[in-house]
Length: 139
Image 1 (cartoon, rainbow, N blue to C red):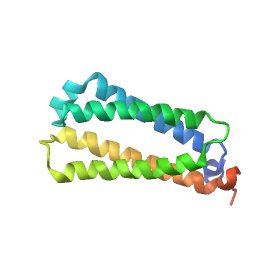
Image 2 (spheres, rainbow, N blue to C red; image 1 turned 135 degrees about the horizontal axis):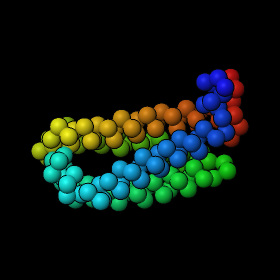
Image 3 (cartoon, rainbow, N blue to C red; image 1 turned 180 degrees about the vertical axis):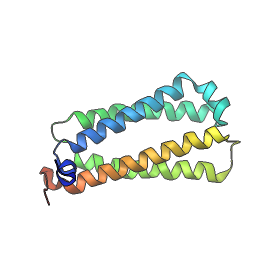
Image 4 (cartoon, rainbow, N blue to C red; image 1 turned 60 degrees about the vertical axis):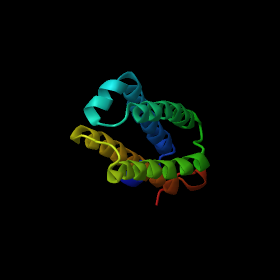
């Protein structure tokens, strides 16, 4: 299977959304199960970690729902692309503002989330472009 065919596969968007759901579920669960430990380790406020953990679990459920559709909801996935880019910008802004005494582990945690969502946004955007009108494009 060529790279073009891989990205144009009708299942590509679903697979990317499953990856998005899994990464958000894992991050959200970690942030909720180990809120206090992560707060001490990262220097991030426990309330921020807990609140974003709840959000990530809710988003993971929505992403899993999108992934499970026979035809992924392209309009919603388009919003997800912008949401993922917004999350990455929020991560950078969080570090840049200097409002919290973020440790090196905290910087790594936040930058890992930013990098993950940028990669997911790019894959989602690629899938949307390559599967215009719900049909695979083989060009």
